[in-house]
Length: 512
Image 1: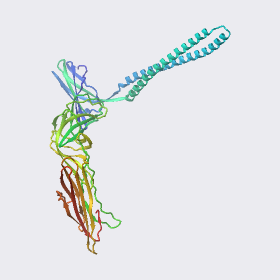
Image 2 (image 1 turned 90 degrees about the horizontal axis):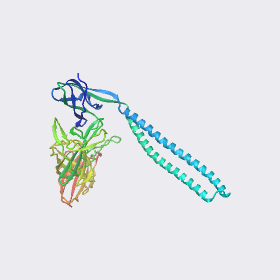
Image 3 (image 1 turned 45 degrees about the vertical axis):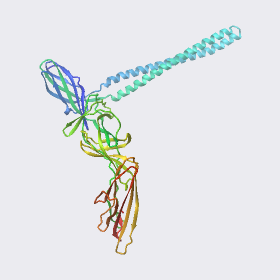
């Protein structure tokens, strides 16, 4: 059997799924004639040993078997830790030496100070007795001043060197602390392939494996200008696999997930016989809050190449990015495309005294739009954030674009009267509402106005719609009324609807 051969197979491609990734490595190995184990690079512990695949290409070579096993080893950082510890000790000694040098200078200055005081006393006596003159006194003073100044200069120099030495020591201690926090037993996946070569040759090795601790999420920038919606389809990739990915061929594979913010929806307005005192009373259901909106910003990204893979799509990113194993999101562009949008407004004044801009869009792109967050821009201005559900190519979807303050809605109780009833007779409650809609936009606006009347759950309680002006475009069995208005710029419209509730005088109505 020939000696072991090692291959330096670097990462050449990454396919990211919604819950993992497939990594492809490639390299060359020199083989001698005969059977030889070929050792691959150690794979991160996040690699699934069962997913490892090896392919060998070359003249007169054959791949016999592949083994992938989880191994334990000593962290190579330990050697680095020992080196860093020695460096820290050396720098500590250097800082201490500077402290000692400064202390020596302080002693020297103290000795000079004591000596100058004694010399000054002696010189003063000598001058008083005439044994020395003023010239001798000035010469001595100059010597002492120069000696002190030189000592102070040396101390300043020592202080500057100590600051620099302390900075080096602090940095070395931080590097040591970081290394010590990483030191310990490591786990990795060891891959070895048995390859037989008829003659000495060079073979190409391809290694692929699946890893966990990685995923990608879609992110959208959606911009509405007039009747056109411009969509930027982005991907946020995160990974903690234990190995950094260089900027190589990057492919994204689709999956599923969704989140949805709903418009306020009218629910049936039920009324019923009021329960006896002490019992539960009927309640009126309330609507859910409106969805926010979405749109997009200017950008000139490239478009990914789209292909089908079974029931899913795969996107080969046109401009790959490096993705380090730091767990942070790293963005890349899948595509940017324009879609036609049919824009109108929806208003539910019984719940919210505002009109919401809505765009009905058909996904005319070849891309499957996955559930994800969408940032919304309208006429270049950021208006908020929403979320998209899964949208297939050719599928129609609604996009809520937030409140339009240029459409004013006001709903008022216009009438409420209760008839008198004789003993054993019935009572009638007459209720009417008036809703005013104003268009302050500079263009014609289409507004869908939704309201409702009660629905009786008791055979003795009768509800009848007595008036609706203009006539509603739709009325459901659950009491929902819909008006479709088209208002020119600066125009307004008034909607009136009135209904009656008739019930036996002895019956108290709940929910009205």
